[in-house]
Image 1 (spheres, rainbow, N blue to C red):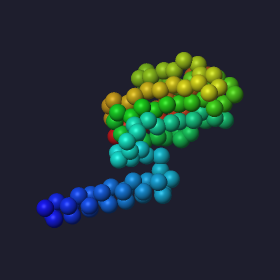
Image 2 (cartoon, rainbow, N blue to C red):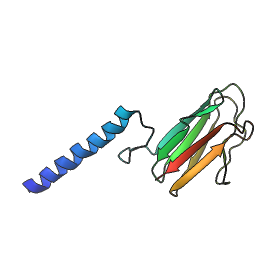
Image 3 (cartoon, rainbow, N blue to C red):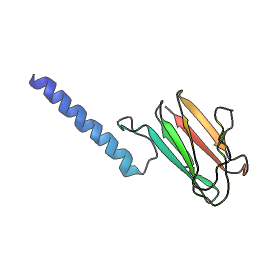
Image 4 (cartoon, rainbow, N blue to C red):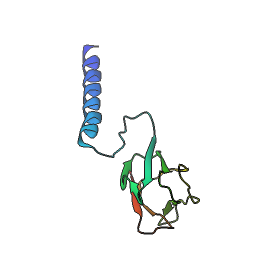
Length: 118
């Protein structure tokens, strides 16, 4: 019984240490320990922020247009495509497969981003 408790305590401490490490390094990687499986990307000043987002499989990513002009979110490989998003409008997509998903704004093609799903 004591051995099981000790192992459980170590797992909890180790898990909290890993989760805290991501927060301290300023990483934009979603922790597998997170209960919420939703991450956000802000569209502002003609850019996606963060530019690259790393998330676990099953995560829903929501893009919110904070700019005062319209933008879109379009997968370069045709996996997802938003409608034209006006100020404060949102688009969400759930990533069910591991991989790298580059995207851009079809109105402003120099605006690019990427979601990495692990």
